[in-house]
Image 1: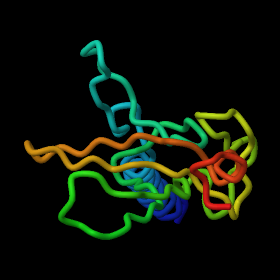
Image 2: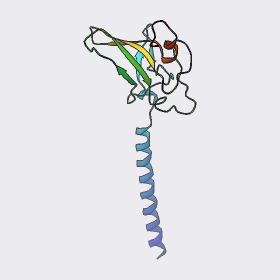
Image 3: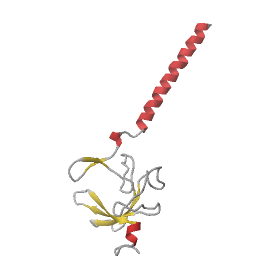
Image 4: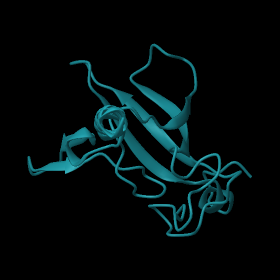
Length: 144
């Protein structure tokens, strides 16, 4: 009878170990790794991470920016607003600050970056941040 309980215990232990290994594999696949981060070439040709223009957090390949592009869609230069990335919009993660890359002021949650989207002929797009809703307010080219 003792061998029977020993055998059942060994089977349960093997089953629990297999379940643990399977759980670890699933967890490793879902966690972003360094090679799962988006990269791009900078002006000097050096590879760098794609970062959120508001909080400077590196973006994973499955993370997108929250932005709005305004019509007309056929022009080479369009107005665009950037609200942030999943790390800083709609609610910033702890320790994440939303800062304007132009004026350096903190951008509130209801604020945004104002930018120009250039649609290049070779299919690439280029975004130029011109300011935030805070620094645009007092400028002569601002909204109000």
